Image (tube, rainbow, N blue to C red):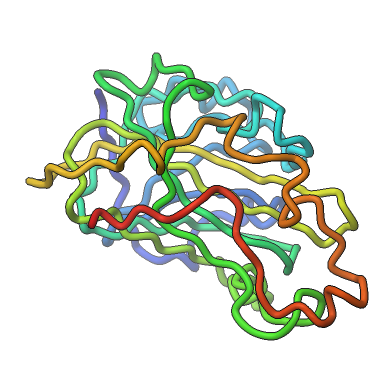
Length: 252
């Protein structure tokens, strides 16, 4: 169980290769930076490397179906050998160097791995949501979404901080970040990426059954928050949006 940190000198000084795509490129915990998978770099230079903590995602193309097995951790989701160490109650920040779409929710999830995250089936583990962001103000079509506020157009990275619930019992977990873009009529686009965490702490809590979901299975393709057209007259008069995937578990 390797954990190989790289000191974060400055996000602005990171390589420009990430600017060519719109996925989750790196993670930071405190002042430590953890390099993620880069689909623009040869796979053989990354897979199995002791510093790799993120599951492989082959392309910037989205997942289009809620029933696609790759909706869990993207395609192909090959497991890395290492883990990001983090204490429950601490913050982990997902780093994106380019994000184009402005409309739709963003969610973060955890799944317990047991003894080894490298051998689990990402479609069989039980995921629970620990963070979500959706429509912040205004109507569905013209309002401000968290996804829009998350964007950066000045060359700086888009940063997505998430707190690990402080009461969570320690162990090996996967963290799953998902951006759901709904800017095209009834053609949702899912962008998931997963990484491995070694969570420490003295917590003893774990979510009850109603918080636990599987991917695929967590979403219904007919959910009006997923199969949606935000450009209708009705959408112009709608000022609330229910984020798919059930409630957030805070550890309480």
